[in-house]
Each structure stands twice: as structure tokens, then as C-alpha cells.
Length: 511
Image (cartoon, rainbow, N blue to C red; front, side, top):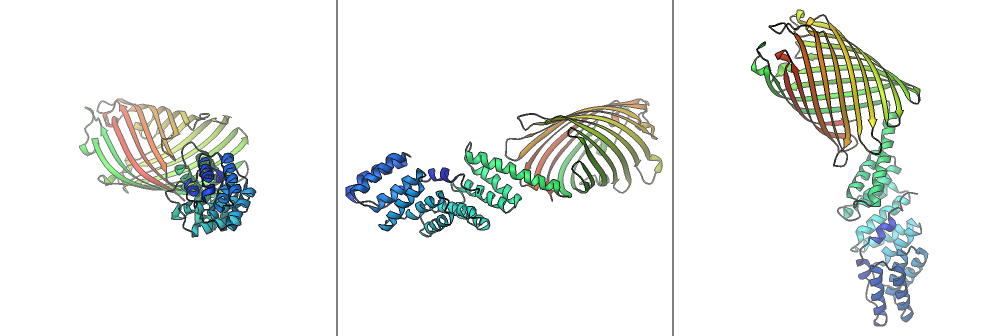
């Protein structure tokens, strides 16, 4: 049964005051008892035992028997310790440490019911070390299978801020785990890890148990046929367009600065599952509300059907079909239909390659009162991505190459594009914190002369984007984040030559 792991470590860390506060003995044996106490405080248990036995030979003193039982407890000789402690009790020891030491002996023998009674009795005496008795009462109840009662005892304010709080959190986590309350167990193990002394067995095992419970939670989520999350974010968006001699733009467009609030709901339901195959339907819905430029307010909905099938242990094929529909201030919209087959090959346990082809049909209407400004288009994209989980680290990398061809019934929008990207994820300095970042470069070569340029030049863009994000997981369900992205688009057409910075802060709640 779980629960005895840190018992003796905690016993050895007990204050020596338990021993020192024992009542004084008769003069004939006092010197030997004092010497034994000193040896006991130095953890020289064999030598201390010898001194207490010599004191007992001189005089049958109850305090000598109590301290002998204490020394035997520390040596893990629990049967002998219990005999000595019972002898001290029969001789009517005046020390209030007797119940505590008997509880330790019973616990060492696995007699948790008697141990619980002894520690409860010690608490009733209001001893200076009653916080330790609270801890051991909870451990005893845990080992008796009284998990709910154990949680109640271990959650006592008496243990807050004491040297035993990390052990209390640890055993609270074990009790929640036995009750299959995995989220509560994860939270308790996380607090145990935070409060445990650094580089100790307790800190290491709390971390291991936290990882174990999180795997259970993730497994439960995978078995669950649905998921849902809600993200809310506030952002500051600055956009500076170079413009140039070939085009003149209003200042509120060429030098734009605005704040926005963006709620986003994501949800999915698994329609089908076998050991090798899965089929999901996903929904994404969100909005962006601009503070100053409300003509850019957007409302977006998207639905997708995605599936995967395991051909071999290393080879996975997938397919995704999706449709996104976006309104901008009820005056313009875009509709995008995508079909994306893919194939992934896992070369090692820590690296995999994915080849994806995407066919996309776009329908844009920029002004509902002027359909002539609308356009349709088709885009074909081939992407090759490489995922690497760097061995013996917690660093995850993803690199990609992307080639696209776009044809449109609007001549300004026919172009070929080549892009490269690299992203990374890694734990940060603080617990349950992750940093991510990345770079991407794209080169767009347009096929026709651009109608927005007075010189009717063909448009060529080079786009460099950098992003970074810091995410903090507060609980299993709540994650906060801050992020920054910068896009530098260099174009030979002034209207498309811009720098854009977006600063965001938000929070995600997973249902």
C-alpha cells in the first residue's frame, strides 16, 4: 500500500525538543540520561540506547524507558520500542511525548489503526509538535484506506507553513489518486513539488507522481470523445505602411494603432475510433472587436472534418476537409474551403516527417455593395515539416518548407510563394511555464502588373515574421499567456510595404 515512503525521513527530521522536553529523571540516573539525549540528538542511536539501558539498570525510571523507546524507534526496532514505551506508560511517565512515540512505533509496525489513535491522543494534549501528529494522523488514515478522512486531516491549517506541508500535500495527492480524483491529485503533487526542499527525494518523487497523474489525465482526455476550450485575449496592434511615391494612403490606415478584444471557442467531437483510426469533427468560432477602428471588427466560424489511419507503427496517413467563413463589419466576407491529405513517417521515437498537400478554394467579397471588387481563387500548396523532440531534453523543434501556387480571377492576386519556418517549444525558468518562438520567411512573386501602382509594376514581396510566447499553466484547465509577433513585409509596391507589431495577453480555459 502507498504511504510509508517518507515516514522515517520525516521521523529523523523531528525536532529534538521532543526529547529535551521529557520530564527530568532521578539524580542517580540523570547523568546517563543526559548523555543519552546528547547522543540521540547526534543520531548516534546505538550509543544512546546503551546509555538509557545503563540508566535503567541503576534506577527503573519511566523517562529512561521512554527515551530508550525513542532511540529504538529511530533504529526502526519497533517491537522493542513498543515494549519499552509500554513499560514507561506502566511506570506512569510524566512526559507528554509518550503518545507520539507509541504512534511512531505502531506506524513502523504497520498497525495504522493504533497509530492513528496514538497520534490523535497526542494532538489532544496540545503538544508543541502536534503539527507532526496531524501529518502522521493523515498518513495513518491514508494507509487504512480512509482517503476522504485523510484529506480532511492533511488539509488542516495546522500544517500550513510548517516543514511538513510538502509531505501533507504529497499524501493528499496520494489519497486523491486512490479516489480517482486525478485533477485534485495533480494540483496536490504540484504543490508538494513546490514546497519540498530542493534536490530531495520528496521533490523528485512529487515530480514523478505529477507526471504520472498528468499522463492519466491525458489518457482520459484521449478516451473522451470530445474537447472544448475558450480563449480570451487582449492585443495591441500597430501597423505602419511605408506607402511611397506610387500610392498615397490616409494616415489612419498608413499608421494604424488599435487595441482589440478577441474571444475564441474551439470544440471537437470524435465520430469514430478504432485502435488504428480516428475521425473528428471540429468547430472554431470567434470574434475580434477593435476599440478605435470598428470597421475592422470580424466574426469567424469554421468547421473541419479530420481523420487519421495508422498504416504501420511508423506510417500515418491523414485527411482534413475544412470550411472557414469570416465577416468583416457586415460589409465584406471571405469563404475558404480546404482539402489536405497528408502522410507522416516517424523515423525514430523522437523525430517524424510529414508531407502535406493542400487544395484551397477562396471566395472574397470586399464590399457587399460592389460585387465587382470580389474575387475567387485557387491555391495549391505542398509542405514538408520535420518535428524533432531533442533527446534527453524537453526541447521540441519544428521546421518546414512550403511551396504555393495561386490563381485568381483578380489579376492582382496570381502569385507563386516559397516559405521556410522554424519554431521551438521549451520549458522556461518557472514551474509549469513554457516558452515558444519562431521565425518564418516567405517570398511572393506575383505574375501580373499590380493595378494599385501608378507605374503598373509586378509586385514582389519578402516577408519576415518573428514571434515569441510565454505560457504559464496555473491548473490543468487554465493557462495564461503573453505573446509578441513582428511582421516585416518588404514590397516594391508601397501599399504592401509595412511593419506590423502585435502584443497580446490572454487566458485559455479547457473544459
